[in-house]
Image 1: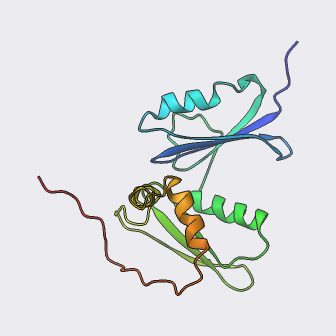
Image 2 (image 1 turned 90 degrees about the vertical axis):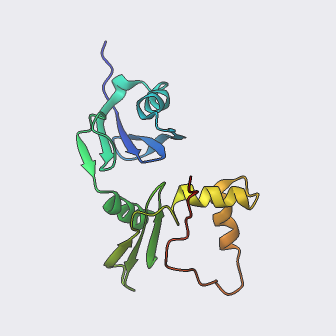
Length: 173
C-alpha cells in the first residue's frame, strides 16, 4: 500500500550552513533543522534529511542560493522570501537586517509596510555572520553571533558609530 505524499521540504543552502524545514501541505511546520556544512554540502545535506521519510515529500522548494543538485520544483529569491516571512510573523516593522555567512542586507519599509529598497554589502567579510561569530569568540561570547545579538539588544546606551570602510585585516606572508 503506497503512502500519499503529504509534506513540503524547504531547503536553504548558504555559504556556511544548511537549513531545512518540513511543512504539511497546509503550511504547518513539523520539522526544522540547521547545520554548518564546513564546505561538505552534499554530505551535510544527506545527514540532515537522513531521518526524514522521503516517500512522504510531495514538493521541494529552495532558495536561489541553493546548489542545483537539490532537485527543487521551485526556487525562491532570498530577499523576497525574507520579506514574506517577516510579514507573516510580524505586523509592524520598518527594516529587515539579514546577516548571512558572507553577505548582509538591509531592507527598508515605509510606515505603511511598503518596501522602499535595500542595501547590500560589497565583497567584504565585515558584518557577516562568520565575521560576527569570530568577533564574539574574541569577546569570550561562546554562543557566537546569537549571544552577541542578545547583548546588543540589551544595550541602553547610545549606539556607537561604526566606520563604513572595511575593518577586516588579513595576515600578509
